[in-house]
Image (cartoon, rainbow, N blue to C red):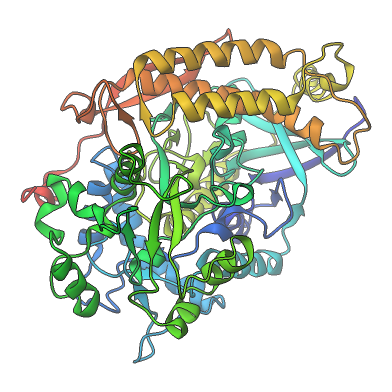
Amino acid sequence: MADYETHEYDVLVIGAGGAGLRAAVEASAQGATTGLVCKSLLGKAHTVMAEGGMAAAMGNVWPEDNWQVHFRDTMRGGKMLNNWRMAQIHAQESPDRVAELEEWGALFDRTDDGRISQRDFGGHRYARLAHIGDRTGLEMIRTLQQHAVHRGLDVYQECTVNRLVKDGDRVSGAVAYWRESGKPLLFRAKAIVLATGGLGKIWSITSNSWEGTGDGHALAMYAGAEMIDMECVQFHPTGMVWPPSVRGILVTEGVRGDGGTLRNSTGKRFMFEYIPPMFASETADTEAEADQWYNDKTVRRTPDLLPRDEVARAINAEVKAGRGSPHGGVFLDIATRRDSEYIQRRLPSMYHQFKQLAGVDITAEPMEVGPTAHYAMGGVRVDPETQASSVPGLFAAGEVAGGMHGSNRLGGNSLSDLVVFGRRAGLGAAEYAAGLDELPATDGGEVDEALARIRAPFEGEGKENPYTLHRALQDSMQEKVGIIRTESEMLEALDDIAELKERAANVTVEGNVQYNPGWHLALDLEHLLTSAEAITKGALERKESRGGHTREDFPGPSDEFGKVNVVGTLNEEGTVDVRQEPLPEMPAELQRLFEED
């Protein structure tokens, strides 16, 4: 293992989804030599799962829309836990990023007069999601990927980073291995951008695919970075619930934006019973009014499009009350409102997904849906302007970065987040790298230690199986740190995590290093367990219910906790410490946008 290949760059980007590609494009455009590492194949990132659209206040459908309204919606959706400056930058710069994608070749759906079309989504006052049917993320990746390849970037596909290395306090490189051959690599770099996505595979029911193991969150913690609000995890209200083989696969919010309604087993549209006071003035409280909104958009919007945290809790409550669908979800019906041609044109992926995977024709019958672990709002604490972390030379963008979405992300804000802050991270990293005359040093002993850790599962004498431990973690987190949380159950989860950490030290894998999925999972386990511990300890610390964090023993929001971030760091013993820190203070001119609340 001491025999490894070495590559040197000004900027190394880890992760090749929307944020990573945009960061790499920007760093390269600034003249930095740039390497791009992706765990899977290029084009397979979770960005392609973002189906409904990209939020930007372009005003193409509603001229009244502007960045101030988008900013206000984002902050209210995040229950005011957002970093206000990130939310402001995002709202102001998203329209430019949409226009940029179009200039680079993205083919957006159009309005009748030829402008980029925008659709309704939960929590957004106006229709503002630029979209390509229900395949928007796929089109974003296609466009960014072609633009990145055009720039001549070095791309390392099916290559997994296991550790960052440092020169004193600053990052200086990354240790990785090829998934195909098992051979190790050392990347030396002046600056590193983490764009590794999420951590949904911590739970047993998730929209995330195998890549979502919290790698970037854990890598940042190992390197000494500060994390914020890790307890805030979004459970998307509409994932598939049947058959079991596809449970958790995402059902886009675009179904509800285009006319879909949620009903329980009695046929009742139950969301009218779950409208929170914050949204009461702008949400229809009768079916007639909601139906009118779908027809002409001149009255208060349907409660089916409340923010995701509100809808997920409502579905959970209906199921617990015995009013769920046969397979433990609720019904999502668009066939009653829209004809077959409209559904297949606007939601082609959803039509084929249900037809092929569940044998359900959504143009004629309802879908069964339920909450699924989807998105991490918490992550690496970053500077809003540059996306720099608390570790010199380390930057983060996209889902791995915290702050932008507060305690709950609005649908559609993820895609615009990726390109707004991916660009800023690439720019920040390139400028940081330009300030260094030479590559930081990499300690040979630190590299050897990282390489030995990668090889360890083949050399152990224990009998623990990585798949068994992963399933145990998922079951524990699903049951004890899921949608609804209590102190007693979360303390049990911490005990489970501690036990699983001990058992993980005795994981042994067999076979060769070539294409060995058991080995890959054995290495991912450390990241999963570290991230799960940070989430659980943050959830214990935040004694309130806010956004994606709901505690049965503290059922309401707290004025005290509404003013603080929960900050997590890894201590010398390898466990997570948490503390509270005040939120950045919002300027008076922005505070005035919320006076009516």
